[in-house]
Each structure stands twice: as structure tokens, then as C-alpha cells.
Image (tube, rainbow, N blue to C red; front, side, top):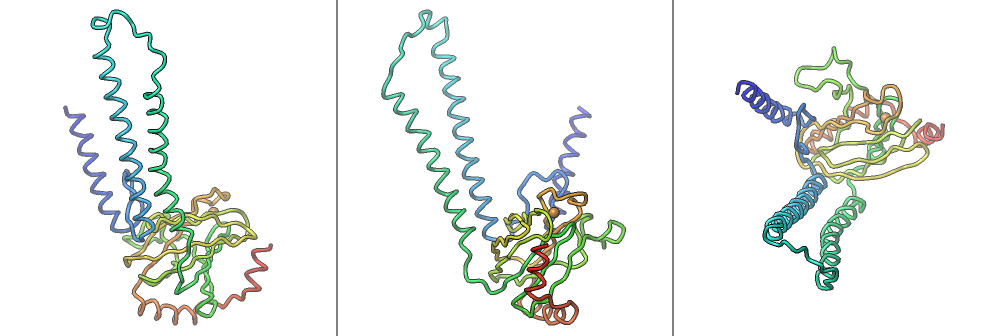
Length: 274
Ligand SMILES: [Cu+2]
């Protein structure tokens, strides 16, 4: 009993930890959910998951019931002579058409979601994220073209309340509620820009410009990681996005434009081509 109680307490504390870390918009130990949803894309991804899970649960329940029914109804004591039926056209038609309908019910919302994700609405802002071994560089071509590096903080200098191995020195900053067009590329090997709270994942390929978009609905700091193995320090190039109200963002841009150097398109192309 004591063992079971300990396991239960462990589970409860893991759930509490989950809730506490949920506020930091970062993954937590023992997390079992998808975590925070801070964009409509993420909400749609979770809804699609729930939809497919529900279909899966219904299929498992139906198959379990059919097996149970067959075991009881056609048991040897009740049916000493086995059935010799080999053809039953209506049944064969049924079990062919049913999976088609189920696959259709999964495919339709999946394709709808893919279209929603890939159709970039008119953006108020473009940010370019460039993967490097092993950090990210963000540039703001619409705001004068300043660019800066975003490097993971060493564990010893992570401020209280920020997650170890996810906190960075300079975050990507976006305004809440604005459609942000994100261009993603790499200067060396393939990286991947992965931000779970926003439902974003896109490869950063050298010599190629991939693009995606997001609209962050809630202010806060969101954490993600490079999730394409890219070498020795792959685990140490996190992504931190800070979403703030438009006036705060405008003030940040004014400050950032004086602090960070302007990187011309030619310089970026030269880096990408390297
Ligand atoms: Cu990487």
C-alpha cells in the first residue's frame, strides 16, 4: 500500500510541477499534455489530435466489443459445430467502406489544417531566423534590418524563474496579435525551428529560405528548441520568443535598432551561401 501511495504522491507532485512550469510556457518534467497553446495554429493542432484520438478510441471500443460478443455468442459449448460461411457480400462491402469513411474523416481536417498553416496571411512584420552551429540569429528587415544573435545562457547565469537550457541572452520579440511572417534558413547545416506553444516547426536549410507564420495570442515568453540534430551542441541552441503588446514592441524596436548592427541583405546572402 505504501508503495502505491508513494507512486500516487509522485504523480500528484508531477502534475503540480506541470502546472507550475506551464506558467513559464516551457516543457516540464512528466508533462503529459501538449502544453500551452498561444496561437490559433496550436489550438487547431490540438483539436485535430483530439478528433483523431476520439476516432481511435471508438475503433478500439468497437473491436473490443465485437471480440467479446464473438467469444460469448460463438463459444464451443453453445456452437459445437463451427460455421462454414466463407462469403457474405454485404459484410465485405461494409468492412471495406467503413475504413474509407474513417480515413476520410481523418484526412479532411488534416488537409484543412495543412492548408491553414501553409497559407500565409498578410503579415504586419517579417522576421528572419537563421540557424547557426549553435545559436540562432534574428533579423528584422521591416524595422531597419538590425540583427542579433540569440545564445543559450550558461546554467550558472540563468535568472531565477527562467528554465535551464532554454533561457537565452536575446529573445526573438514579437507583438501580440500581429501576423508575423517568419523566414527560416541556415548558415551551415540543417537545423529546425521548433516552437511547441505556437504549433510551429520548420526546417532551417542552408541555401534555402523556408517560410511560415504565426500570430501569438497571449503575451509571455515561449520556449522551443532546434529539433534537427545538427552537431555537438545541438541541445544547446534553444529558441525563446517574447510576445508583448504593440506599444512595448515599438519601444523595443527603437531600442534594438540602436543596440544591434544593421545586417544588409547582401551580407546575409553571403552567409547563407557559405
Ligand atoms: Cu540546430
